[in-house]
View (cartoon, rainbow, N blue to C red):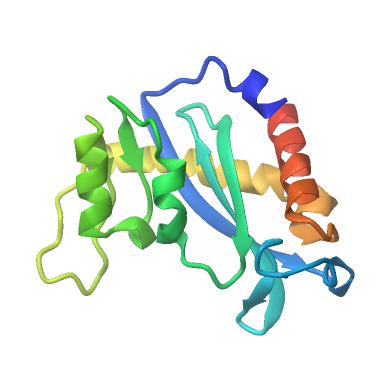
Length: 169
């Protein structure tokens, strides 16, 4: 359903980000928990939702991982096929290799450097303000109880519901 709704995206900007959702104990016990997108992060049982949205805030892709997985590990999967658009991300995606990958795809990275960077990268601060669409999307998505508190045992079921919510929003 999400693939059908994402057929005509506005590809001027592509924003990527991740958010953590709490997974309850009833979600455990179905095979390998890491493969099912369940893990410990800062003491609680959680999952992390990595998402890619277009310039209008419509979701294009989701990846569900364990809560302790870094954001940048899924950036390559989310940015597959990005051509001729601005790639927006927060400081978690500020690595040199990711910037080079975005540039090789014919796009322009709009990602600020980390605060401890020796040579900070330049980025367009006005375009970076457009990244709010993914934060707004996560806010809308977390209005659904089944998203902000994960009860599903399998990553497949949870991802299916995320696609359903993405199509409704």
